[in-house]
Structures are given as C-alpha cells and as structure tokens.
Image 1 (cartoon, rainbow, N blue to C red):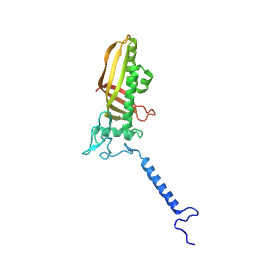
Image 2: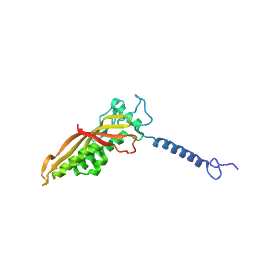
Image 3: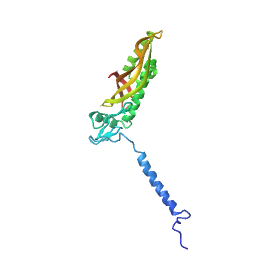
Image 4: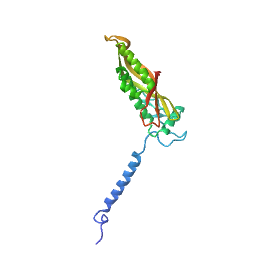
Length: 226
C-alpha cells in the first residue's frame, strides 16, 4: 500500500511536526528580541559609537527639541551625554529615561511634602544636610502659626542639565519648569506671602547616589532657582 504524503512518524502527520518546528523557531526569535534591553545598552560603548538617547524624532541627524511636557535626555555624542554614559557603564541598573521619570515623581513628592510639613517623607528623599534645611523652615513656619499651600498645576519640562561621576558618587542636575500655586497663610488664613495665581517656576535640583550602595534612592542634595 502506498503511504500518503501526510502520513509518517507513527500516528502524527508530518505537517503537524513541521508546524511545531516553525512554532519553536518563532518563539526563539521572539525571545531573542523581547529579551533585549532597549535604550542604554551594556557593556560600555566606545566614544563616537553610542546610540542616541533622544526619544523624539530626528531631523537632519539632529534630535528635534522635545515639546513642553516631555522629558529630555541628552544626546550621547555631546559632552554631557558622555558624562551620563559613565554612570550608565558604572551601574547596570541605571537607565537615564527611567531616572528622569523618577526624578519628576520625587519633585512632586518633595514639594508637596514640604508644604504639608511631612517630615518622614522628606527624610527618605533628601540628603541629611538638605533635610536639616527643610526641617528648620517647617519648624519656623509652625512656630509662627503659618501654613504653606503648594499646588503643582503641571510640569512643563524636566531636563538633565549636568552629570558627574567621582569614584562611586554620582550626581545629576535636573532642571524642572513647572506651573505652581504657592501661598503662605497666617493663623487666621490670610496670605502673608506668595499668591493664589499660577506662576511658572524654574528649579535646578541635584540628585546624588552612591552607586555601590544597596540603597537605590537618588536623594536631593541641592536645590536652587534656575
């Protein structure tokens, strides 16, 4: 009896075996793609060969400036980008876009916690010296019977301005441009400073972290108006 072209390997048709082989091939291909880390790759990338950090579109080989409301990560071909890559190469868990998103969340939390006098939250997000400054201001405000109200309406831009790595100590400066309402009220509820009007405020915040430390938190180490 002549065997059918679809018969073989016992009771399993050959076509099923072929489909199974194709499925295994596709799964392995998907794993090879989905398992790759996207963005800042390891190991260290030689100078002049780094892929662009910018997530926005490219025009004439140059990143288009990000629109308001987005986060800007520097081009690695710039001097700042190369300094940032030193941190990337020193810490396998550091990802600049993720850091910038976390810095924006920290900015919101710190501003809100300071207005509310939330010392435990501030202590976890500030360096000891900065916490002492914030705590003294909160204590003085409480002694005067005042309270502070801050409302962040929007963060217009968050941009990495500088980065440094000295030994294992990393520092990154982020410029925040935000629309805020800031007003201080006395014990009777009358404004003593600030205004209920929305104002655009620019802040330069320096976040620091010891890369070899088990503590993953980047803490605010300095803050000034930009």
